[in-house]
Length: 579
Figure 1 (tube, helix red, strand yellow):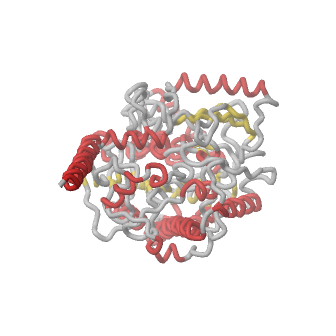
Figure 2 (cartoon, one colour):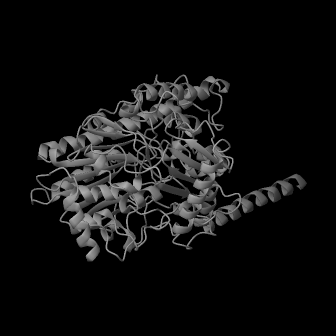
Figure 3 (cartoon, helix red, strand yellow):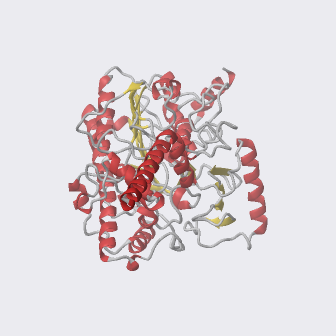
């Protein structure tokens, strides 16, 4: 109680922009969206709704999240480091040696409170629609974590056209509404449906004088990448030159827009194949896949625009704060290439195809692979899963009520754990009680109010780890380690202000800084209970193994049946030959 009283006293003295009433809050999360995938961040993809929000707000060009979805989502809703909030890795990629130890559960801990709980206690209506992925037992669904109304996908992803899983580990796509299993309608497209539900939730209690918090979590552009054909058609001619040309194009656009400095060097990822070595048919196929991806981004933007226009119609737009970001960098995985025939057979059994003529449409299974994922993260290095900037640095826009001097860009080092403290300051809500872990991030209110350029000092250390890939940010510098296959498993040091592409390793020329930051990382790991991954750990390989174990009885039965059929066929053939 004393801590909350002190907090309220400090809040009254803070330089907060005056509001006629507590603002509504709309928190929008894209899935696997790259740094330069939207128009306000130098993309060729048309996203006018997000461009309008950027014009009415601030673009944060040095914003960081986790390199995988659930850890980011847990930090976004609690402000607490992923190793303390229960989700240091997605449960689908958790190695057995870690599961259940030191809070390595892969589901949201009961030792943290969500921002929805805190806002609801402060008089807000609280809603969520879209992907959840923070636990599906009754105590961890949104209705028990502070949300009044909820329509959510509990899994890591799903088909965007129907209630169908996207990986063999899932038997179905598990949707819930207000804590109960939910059946999707026959006519369904994820981005449209998620916004429809958000609008319905807001309308259900509108006019009673209470502000609302709406968390809108898209499936776009998580695999399978899918979109109505009309959106794909808008980009059919855009990507014929391939992923390296697109990466170069976006690099130049990002420099011209001031998102990164001219000193940025464009590095090539070792996982990016030579476009010119592909056949004409392969080039045509991959170019259309990227057109599907671009169309899915634009479709998401269209439905964001629908939500914004609805708030204007209700008269709520002027008193609403919008926060938009991605949960991590772009997805490089290609399950067909990685898992081969077993995955192809599973796709066939589920009714998926990769037919060129209908790519992205109903029943289509599309990925963009490491080549176009690298382009989506341009000019940064790496992508989802890895601790390189392409995996961690994502676009963020904060717009609307409480933002001074809109239209700005901020190069301040920010982190996903900063969102909860910021929303608490904007709303006037109190932080969690003493029985819970406290948010570790910094409030961005001074930047929103145009009173300070940074919220972190030169000596503030910000640690990170996920699946053995690790980083520590301090001032303008970043210490980083990426495991194979894309990384080399060694620590590197970069100035990510002058070199956000992480092209110039400073570890040998700045040994004292390297040693100091290594000590800072070890302190972070100790305080947050970071566990080492097993030797040879690979997140995607672990997902594959966990998929097999989740359905081991069925796989064993299928294997036994196949053995019987093959062995029986051989016996029959031998008998025929002898006869």
